[in-house]
Image 1: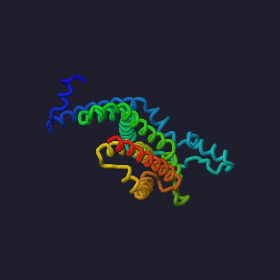
Image 2: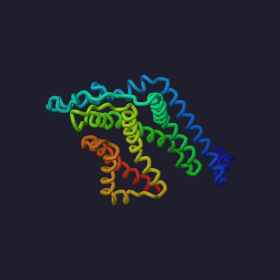
Image 3: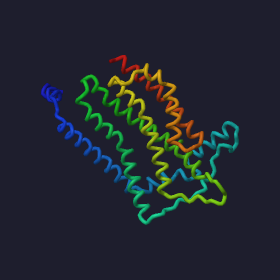
Image 4: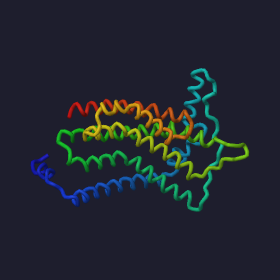
Length: 270
């Protein structure tokens, strides 16, 4: 970095200047989301048949995994998840087109997430010291990795169990489950996205620790409260079956402990 650039960064920016800079970061981020959303819109068979609606099929990877695990531990077919006994229907004239657009936008956000993190970093970069800027690549990579890990965990574990539980749940044999496509896709995408965002906890703790808001001592002190909050969050994100809640609670508690370690490292270097 040249001396001239360094001096320019140190200049005091007005509120309107900050807004102008933020506006262009938002514009570039929006363009990235639109580009990826357009790709998702074009390849709708992959987006819907191969990814989202695949969880309705009894041969979905997760269902097969549970069945193999059940036989491996000598439980026979007790953990094998059977056919999902509901039909997907469209209730409005523009329903499928609308859900196509909305789902494509969600896919665009997921695919563009690493670039969105990069734009966030570029916005806050001038406020950081030179030695802190070196961690840009690591932070973008770790943030993208954690988000992707959360998305995969939500898609392959939490969401399929939710579909199985909610889709097969009946109050009476006289009631048939005909579920709208909007309801099905909303359930799958909401759970999957929520898991992706929740897995960003270590990155959030890193920034809060950098700002002096969080310390490892505070996180240890409120560990019991965090456990209760994790159980509540898991109950909100997942359907009311204990298996899904446990599946989400365990990694969240692990992430919390990892976050304590991250906070300790950050505060030791302060």
